[in-house]
Image (cartoon, rainbow, N blue to C red; front, side):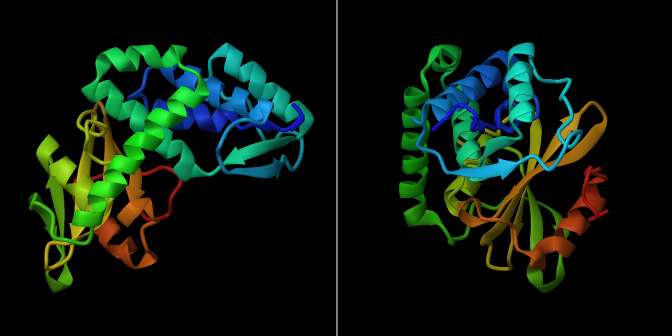
Length: 248
């Protein structure tokens, strides 16, 4: 692969930052490791060739560290880049987050890790969660605290302990819990009348402002459109502001 096909380091950095929960140096180091591997043709990720439509379309990101901003300018100059599949980046990010919460010594080593080492750690964690989910997915999860009651016995439930978050991750087959989302955010689960989880939603708290962060269905699938009305009820209930979406 020639160097003119560069990885999308801007998106990699943004995802790794996890809305500020991962420190800038660690997020930048992981983003660089990924994109260097892409430039060398050794990456093990799904990539989508993408063309920048025209000048001015991709404006500079003031939050990027200088070294990453320089890489991003090269992307703009070439007019082409390789876009990552979001779920691939989220798998890496969730491993970084869980390591920060459960193994601080390993977390401090991440900036010095090679891409193959990062990938192995993340894939092993993902495999452990997937194996566990075979026994628990689509089964009722540990009840949380009901905050919104919907038609048909459905509810939105607040998950405010590590144990509840771990149970949700096990029931949904995704990476909520396991130390990755235990702090700096609020997690809700959409449950049917039988207590089975259908959607997990993360809200970020920044001072007095609450905004919608991530949302996921079983096994990190996209939440179905049929749940939009339920999500709107939750957003209105907690007074969240969500930039860029028309749900409000």
